[in-house]
Length: 356
Image 1 (cartoon, rainbow, N blue to C red):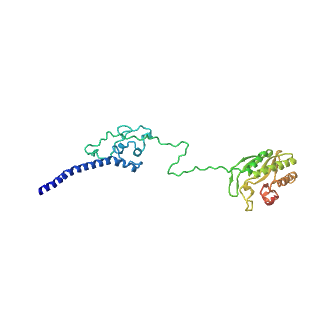
Image 2: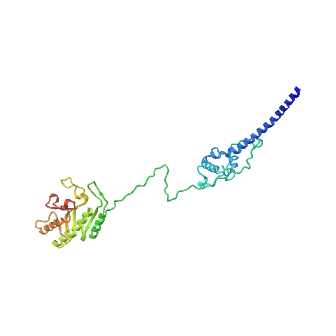
Image 3: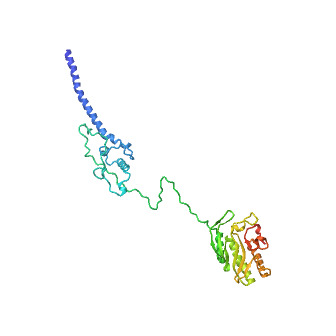
């Protein structure tokens, strides 16, 4: 009885011993197939979200992800970046034909890189090596285009260097309206003059818009040409036309030919004074001699002992000048003015005039 009971227990145990190896082998085989499938497919596809399209590190080549997704844009961008980093200057940029020696057997294909999968690994059972010959060829990236060149009319700014603006070249300041109107009056009177550059000898000796006068109304010459401001030149021209030339005709039956001036613009002070002279701004003119068309010279310093007509003419010059100028000084005022008449248009309070 005990023998029958032991045989009944041993039989199932033997069956279990025979059954367990077969189930275990099937389980191991199934796990191997699942593991290989996950390694060859799922793990490679899971790399896509983590791939940085700006680098080729960690990308499978040949039989990896390209076999499964041959036209994947991530791989195309990554391959293009890899080629550009490997070759500093593309043959296309240099205008030379593409050298395909390092790009595979045929142009437009790529060398087979390490796939990261062992050649001994089988497709499913570990017996046969993976056949990569039938894998689709890697698609070539888009043709590299020529670099974008800036237009000829567009400014080119070099990176890394500060932008330096070209120097601004400025001309003389614009002429005020009163200076323009003054020159129109000079032209109407027939005055001959030439424009000059601004005079800046010092803070007290300057003329913004000086002119050099060489001719006066009625074809009267100025010798030598006088450097004046326009207002003084206009005042002297009016006095010459309205007073000086008519006075010469009345007394000498002749007109004025040339006015010989001794000083126009001059950067100096008044003698024995700290005040600047009106000559320092082109606001004064000294007349030493008047020449007539008849050939007579009227010298302001030496009219002659019995030259009553000449003395009368010089007195007329002095008195008539006081109606045009604010300052008229001549012989008899002081020693400094013994040989000339000084005319200026210095502004004074209340319109006062110094006529001596």
